[in-house]
Image (cartoon, rainbow, N blue to C red; front, side, top):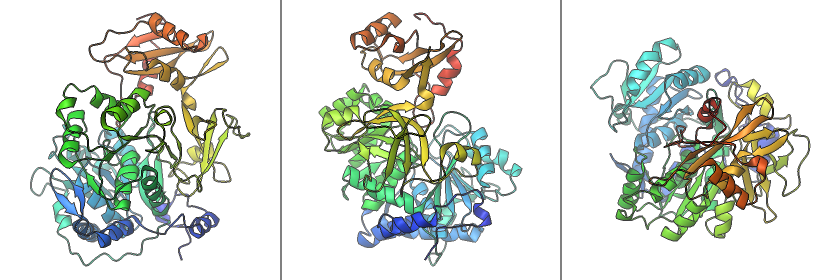
Length: 557
């Protein structure tokens, strides 16, 4: 039996699950000791001809996906890639991503998820952090507007470990230094036959924060598969559903909650590289899409799209959304228009997944993020900001978690681990939450979203939640503007709906006054932007706004 202690030189800097927790999670049945490819093979055994992946370039049955992943695994093995080696993935949403992901699982290699919008600074940081031996990226087949091959060609010689670069559509035959992905798919099918430890890392996610360089988040086969199963249960995933990632496929929101959940359930995954509203609506209509996890901004963009009524989207069954506050009107409008069950979610690549269920009351779906997906297994505490006192229900504090679906430490980052973990293995998330009397969680934002004005604490997301209900506000971000006398003052950045007159600061202050919000919480400055800055996965980029606010004026603009 595996010990859960992969103490090899290759994984220096990885913090494994302690043996006592490994044993407890196995004994409880929460960990099934299934690798990612075990889950795929199980689906292929039960429904070999069922469509596994539908893409713009190919459709694969479960049998074909399984066979292709075996061939690609053999090809990777022939290149010299083996257990614990890190291979960076930087791909759009495509079938090749899915094939390669399960191929890496078969040989125990660890895919590292770099997002399509990452550029040289992030790429260099990640290659160096993980000592990547391989890099898998895309040519110009899907008209991305960026040359990923040139990016890697410009940096590869600076890293002695980076021996293998693999391209999906290199754009020209036999491009020097690149292995074509199609060549891997043509490898032998008789291998590999590796024994992969499900307590080892099976994927390396990246932190989704907007400050500094991303941190490496190792997820084991066991803890990630546990979440695939529990997410499928939470959304009541049906095996005849067609699910589609609405954000980059290597982001945890897609990889865990859509890709993994779909394969666990034996459903069909539809992939579309262009993630704009029109492309996603066309995909839903074309494949009869039932389930996805878009960002709130994507839902609003679809609801406000001028051609919305031209698309047939009635196949939608369940939408999951989070990453930032979901405007309640988005929940009510999607439920009214398509009758969807809405899963309002709070999630992190580090593991926490809390969400409403499709059959919850609409008010719960619109105003809370529900309950943990595995309430009988997830250990959850809410503590004061000193992290020394557990708070009672109803009081807001920092979320702390531990359990079979949470990671155990950032890769090669002892400083962050010291800051965010205690000796008993509890992860302190830096998120402010509270539990309502009915057991549903409310999220107030990150600790860094806390504005201290003259000694008064303001949770910026609470102000944003109120402001986004104003008819002249489509999206809003409230940040703290440094102030010599008071420390900080709340400042609002507003994106109005298209064709709607911009609000004034006085209008917004009066709007909050009518809703009984304390005076000290109301924005004291306003800037209206045509579009708020976004991160690579569509979240509002508060770091960019915090950089901008230093020069902003505390007056009605």
